[in-house]
Length: 354
Length: 72
View 1 (spheres, rainbow over the protein chains, first blue to last red):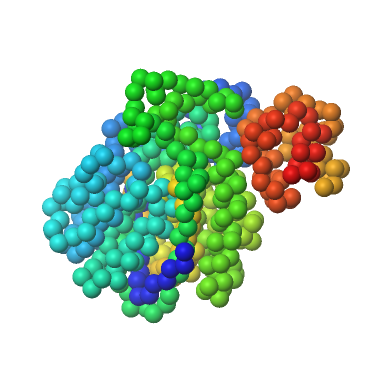
View 2 (view 1 turned 45 degrees about the vertical axis):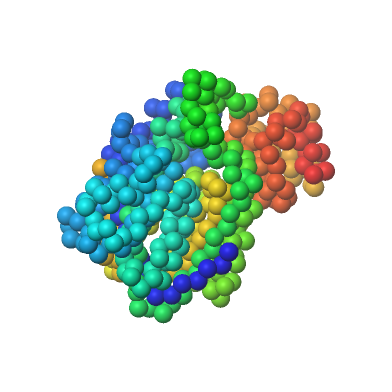
């Protein structure tokens, strides 16, 4: 679906990473594969270190730490926040919404919209679109978008498919009304027929977690996991991304009457280096314009990867300069979404640790 | 599909000097889920065909794999 907005801007991005660094090699001993094969996987996929939350740390803890940092440094005024969006697949509870918990923690005003959105890999783009829609309302001036996921506890240590790439993180993005007349073009697409391609089979209402769902099984490739663990059909996901994402970006650029050359940065979701390079090839984007260095440094924290890519690769530059940016997310849902907009002169764009 | 080119490219994916039609896929030293994904990616890029893991796993030899992709 094509969407279009005007007079909106991103005014700040803060990425919050766990302090704990885990290396590929220290987890490799848990995989049921010869070391040589695992090291080959590391090289091809671009795995190295990833950031993992400490035991007991939840997604909301990283959001609270980030907001506290922004309040303490006078980068955000809590009374000015009209909406709090929490995009995550790892809420604190089934009920209540985690966004309400965070609002309550800080004693924010009651005249506010708190919304939890269950989205993963495309969660940044879906969150931006939701923020833009809210800002069309006269009474909404400032939206705080929180992307946060702590999914590492859900991934089996014996799963070489997912363990080396999973990362935990959160990001806080401030979206507000702007006065530039430039259009923001967005695309949102869903295909629920592939909904279980990335999935945690047990632990919800359909299949509650039990002793049976905790039993480990080995798959045909040699990975072991239980029904309580995250499982990803790598072939289906790869095919889906290669099939759907390039035409989506082509169409987005066509709507803007632009070519790849007109775009400064392609800030995409970070599944792994292999898949990103294949995507860049298919769209015809030079690798320098599409950073793929997040999984090797921090891991893939689903919806947090795009803001992390922006914070890590542009940092303070985005406080002093402005760029034409194409952002895209794709994965769980299946959902694929993109946003094309001018981004720059942010009040802050940085990474902190918690 | 150009068989000679396919055999040359497959050898590169499997880190071998050369591969023969009669070679059994699971006998290659590097054969694992990564080789399978590399083949899926190679076929998608060069022949615009989408393969699934089990489609590749159910082929026994290099020749079987070539025929399967060629006929898909």
